[in-house]
Amino acid sequence: MTLNQTEGSADIAERLFNQFGERMFAFAVNAWKFSEDDAWDVIYETLFYLAKVFHRYDVSDEKRLKNLVITSFNNRLRNRYRDNQRKPAIILFDNLDEFEAIEVEAFEGTATEAVTAALNRLEDWERMLLIQRATNVPYASIAQLTGKPESQLKVYHKRVLQKLENIVKEILKETQNASGKKVDN
Image (cartoon, rainbow, N blue to C red):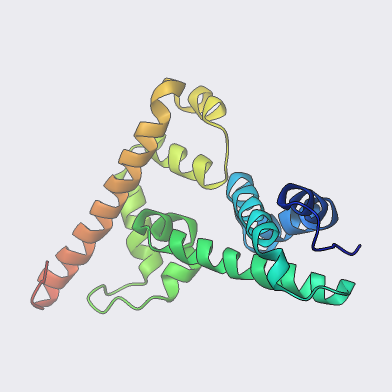
C-alpha cells in the first residue's frame, strides 16, 4: 500500500489503521501488557499524529512506510509505559517482578516480601479487588465476587491502592526504625 500526499488526514489514518491496526493492537497487549483501552489510545494517537505529519516524510515505498509507523508507534508505547510507571500504585501492584528488582536498603527482605506483607494486612475483599483489577476483570464481575456495589468499586479500587502504598511505606519505615537508620520523610 502506498499513500500519496494529496489524501486527507482522515483517509490516511483510516488506511494506516486498516494496514497496521490489528498488529499494533496485538503487540501493545501481548508484548507490552497494555490494557485494551490503553492499547487503542496509543494506536489512535499514533495514527492521527502520522496522518497529520505524513507530508513531512518520504514514504515512497512500503519499507519506509512500515519503518515510520513502527518507529512512531514504539516511541508512543515507550512514552505511555514510562508515564504509567510514574504512578506509584501501578508500580507497586502491576509490576511485582520489576518492583522486586528495586533495591530497598532499609528493608531486610525483598521488595516482594514488603508488598506481600502489605497485601496480608488488607481485608480479603480488598485483595480480591486489587488482584481482579490487575488482570482487567470488569467491575461487574468483581462486584459479584466481593459483594460490594459495582458503582462504588472504582472508588474503592483507588482507595485500596493508596492504602496498599501507605502500608508498604509504613513497613519500610518500621524496618528503618528497627535498624536504627534515620528516617527521611
